[in-house]
Length: 392
Image (cartoon, rainbow, N blue to C red; front, side, top):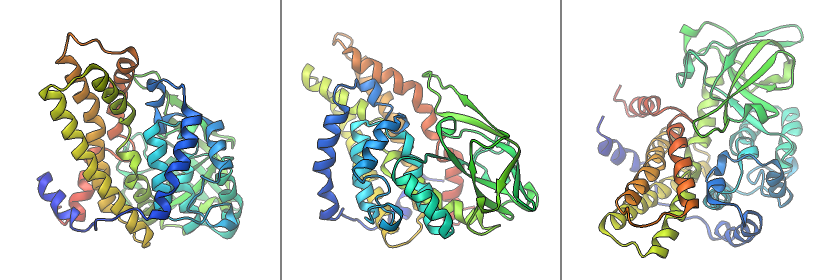
């Protein structure tokens, strides 16, 4: 697989798009709010960005009507389009705001319930998401399956009262802090049946039989968790969408997860901090200049692609393959920025590095390996891209 060739083929399916002026107009209000709420936070704290959990901050966003932007007003949303959410997401991530608490519910769980849920599910969950009262996690990967979702073994068996759930999930972001999980489970057949027999269910994580074990990363944080289900009794209405259609539903969901700016901006606070240092120290050597040019050009192209994906979502399309490519390429630049900045700082040994910049760099160097785990590993993503192009 030649990446340049793949990139050229895929970009032909994306039209260069501008964010509408009415959505761009949101930026000034959002920036004023962020200046007030994030002022004083050190860059190594802001660098946690969409992995930074702060329920009170999420509630402040909800109070301004900025959660559930794309959801209908009858469910508590603002009835705005995906471009409005793109602008909000871009500003939040660029500032390093702690958005992790509500992020998954707002980004994909809410839209998934809106598209596939019953009216009762919409009435119950969506207003709570918009009020920052319901936080969601995603149950996809399993210990013996990883990103190979079609081979999952967690099973929900229909009973007279609903569903009995047994199995486990791993690498589940914020499971230990969430109220609910939307899980991809097997409701019929065996693991060898692959995509057939898979369904999605909503699990109340307070139910008896649910055990959540946080997984600490190298930075000492616990973003990921293992989740175990032992004879968990779920109600009949735990099923979302149609039984057996889970594979199609989860692929539509992944288009939301893989297409947004969070797949580009995990290292943005570090980049901002380094640029401030370069300005203050007068660094303009060849390596610094070349690094800045490489990063900016890479980000500019990927941002344009992400905006084009947003336009597809506006048109009601599900750009799963294109979103997978943007996620794969975005992960590369997210992981490259700490390395490139570290190399630049190391090439100027006589230039003192401010402590906040150094702490931020060290934190992201520890966290960066996880960037290519969340949302699907690089190997799995490239297999999806190859199949989408008919190359395997």
